[in-house]
Image 1: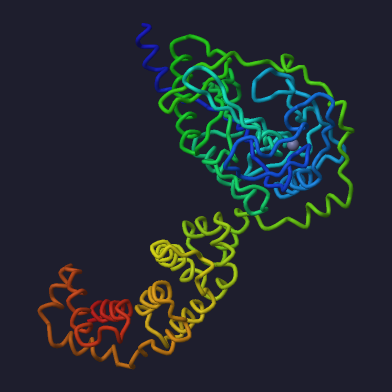
Image 2: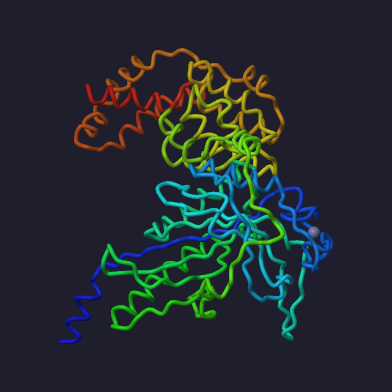
Length: 468
Ligand SMILES: [Zn+2]
């Protein structure tokens, strides 16, 4: 009987609820509460001062630019910028935090109620980065305070995410949003963007299961794999009649394993930071944030699709800041052809040549595309032209002059003549041998290669065969 019950249960659908907590380092010139520079350093502990080393008696002063950046992200994601927010002390003891507390936000975050693609973002907290710790084999820990005090945004979503794929989509969107705004490089490999996920599953769509948190995921793959693993693990626990334990786990590349019991909020003993007055966002600051706003990648994606760019190309271009900037300059006239070339030809050739998109004359290319569309230059020549421009630095003006002009041939009568000449092939076609088209196209191309467009020849051959 138990076995029977189990069989039914295994086929039951589970409803995962996933929430993401993302930390993003801001690309300000100086740190959150002191004037130490933010940047990459060859040596540890170069950009430090008494404030970011947590010496007693020092006074933190909030970085205005970091506040502007936070507000800009909030605005870009349709959120509410809270005019009067508050910094709090989050108390915990760890070597990377010499003060014994982190300055963060709590009940009054700088941004509330934002969203990305239908996923709600409950809050965006402005806080400070901790030092970087290096654990040695003998058990000792080395600390680098260059990172300590870099402005950090903590972006907390509601548990609205239903699958690993959706989680990835959310993260990619958030990553490109901060890159488009220019407030962070959000490079996961460099630790600019880190993710904690919480996962719960339930057999009842309307109910929440017990939440398990997985800390410090540092690649999209790790996020997706850890979520997949955790959904299955929790489903198995529920099916065996056990209860999921609320805990914090970590991802080791293959499975999640318990890390430590999660601190409850009372363990952190949050209280308002007495050294910093409430943070007031005035009109001038808000205007500065608004002046930073640009179209978000998902808006661009929609705009491209509406103008005729195939969906998969629209996505690739829209979410890449550099590609979309170049594309925006020229795409209006021939959206799908330019998109196709940009993604499938130009990017690849530049890569091979070790060049950047900035070195490519997109205007010259677009002039050439127009001539192709008008029938003044052969489509086939375009790829070769890109090649010469990228590898041999030939300007498009020269390439346009050198382009072989299509000769005017009466394609229709040529094809008709061939059809009369090869009645046997036509019979084969009528019997369903569609490969015959290739035979006729080949006959034409033999004499006119480089002078006629093979696609056009193909079209005429099919048309004439169908009507013969
Ligand atoms: Zn400092």
